[in-house]
Image (cartoon, rainbow, N blue to C red; front, side, top):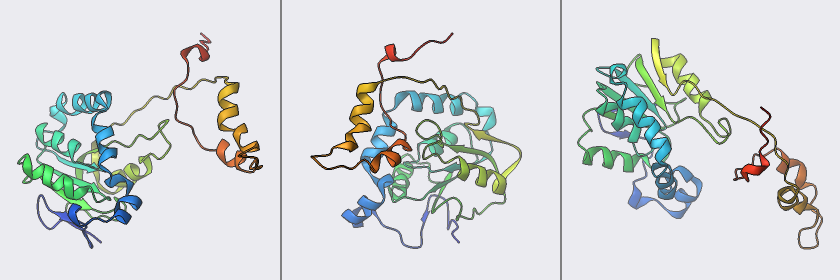
Length: 223
């Protein structure tokens, strides 16, 4: 069981500060990679969407208690404070939480944000309920590696009746395409790998989503 000792403190049974992290910590804790967070922060459309949702809806945050799930570098937690939140409880399972602590202190927001290290499902908040939950829960193609189940668990445990989850709606658009060349490169490839038959890999590879860009001409407008 984990709880916050005080505002702005990262709580962990075995904290690993950035200077103490080894190659093993970085290898097994991919969410601690600085490159991962650099990529997220440079996604301007993502940042703009969350910024608008929080900063243009200050009435949802003013004097409210907020839970930020998967805070990463603490960006959404700090946005919530700027939107008027009374206090933010920011949960993060990876070692990046120590960087988030430094960032929050550097921006003089540590009196308003309490960091808790651990899986949301295992963390016990020092409050009975929260008014708002914020989380970048969407995964690739919305559901792949998403955190929606974690958000639902937190909602059921902590969200006050009539509380707000951001984001709480999503739209998925799906269409089929045909690309024989791409299929040959990614699927039929297993039939002959340097002269070896690895076709037994096909079935597994077909169950995994491939994240890639396709030619707009391959998308048929059925309207």
